[in-house]
Image 1 (tube, chains in turn blue, yellow):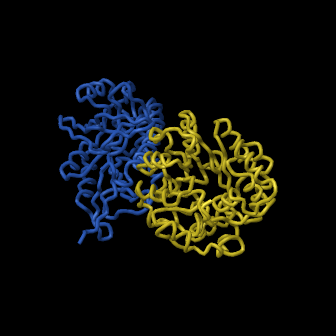
Image 2 (tube, chains in turn orange, purple; image 1 turned 45 degrees about the vertical axis):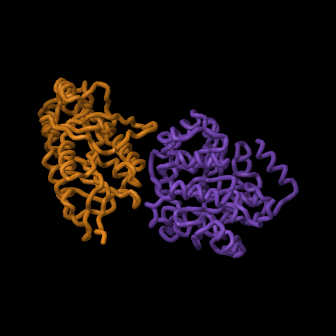
Image 3 (cartoon, rainbow over the protein chains, first blue to last red; image 1 turned 90 degrees about the horizontal axis):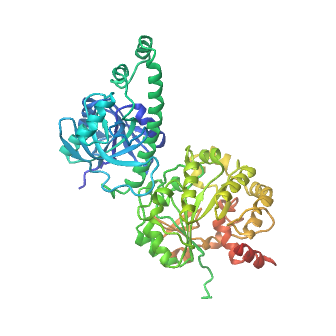
Length: 259
Length: 320
């Protein structure tokens, strides 16, 4: 007797803003009840994926992933993802990467020196991709990095292309449970452009309430320019991420050739 | 020459029905919703090509550029000296172009229902027109033959089709196909309101194509002059459904590309077990408003309801 199970790939976004353009192409279909965060099966019937919006940072990612890898029940049937993808914004750690560039991780590293090779995709995606796909190492750190100098140092020390706050947790837990994992990140801020400490502090929690944003703007009106730039860049970056992710899933996943 | 009464001209090969788009008028993604995750193997596709023997293979679906082994499939069909139309929405041409080599016997047939706004609305997603145009440009740059296929709906503006063809001519597109939409049962059942809004009746089709008659003379039409005369009401043709047999994941689809009554295990089964005289205009209500090229282009090519001068007309079209 074969035990029934869902094995749709699972995609972890930290923020709603990161996921929105992707969800326009892979439309949410069904809610996964009991999840510790927003969780929906999305996309066409032939390419259904489970999308999660976990919230920013490692603890929230771990909570969501613990639940997913614990084989939760969906209508009495177990869910065991055949692939977990960490997707979202990242900061460039090398000069060559611009806002909107896509980084497809070859390896994921944590700031304490541990690293895990990404197991998906097995091969480089051939052909002409727009936005272009760059392969490289992704570093995860516990806090947002705003200063250009710090990013440059991290890039040099860890030989990494981009930095985020979540993927190392995904890599570690997936490796522990022997689940295939990948990481698709889009560059939100380039190496040369620093984020002010005020802005970093404002957006550190992920969601920014209108009241908090207004208060911050009253205290420091110059923040408005920076805030607008970040809003524009994040919209563009999320569009690029949605496009790349949709196409990668469509061309590499359907019949499991790459897993 | 071999005395066969019915023989295929074009094999409609559907290696899969999965598609990245959800076009409003598409019957396939609705009719085959239970088998969208299935695909034919390359070997099954090639066996169908051999079994059927048609000189032309139209690879359609679904979106064939999602098919993982599309490069090998096209290569192996070309090796059999067949002509290929690879019917695509164009979105993945750039990414998969490296899997093909240009050939005088292969066309990318890109589906475009109008200019940007109209097309993106028809396929229910923004950015598709732009991606398809980028795909066409990339294919032309690489030396491939490219034609376009436009489906005419109730809301289709013929002036816009004119503008589309003029634009595609500038991109050096090699030919244009045009066909009225078919009112798929699957669309009518799942979305009757939309079906009533978009699908044309026979008299509407004739009015629309009469309006388009002069305009189409300006362009390198891949649709035959006899078929276009039929569409504009200048002549009658009888349907030659067996001229374009369809093979998909469920078997040989009968009786035709558009109507499904049965899936046959073998091509011979489709040809011999189908009661062909039960189908066609005036015989089956599902054929009442059908004037689609898959049923009537073979009639034009085979000289069904032939008129004086047709041979010359078809010859000049072939040479143009």
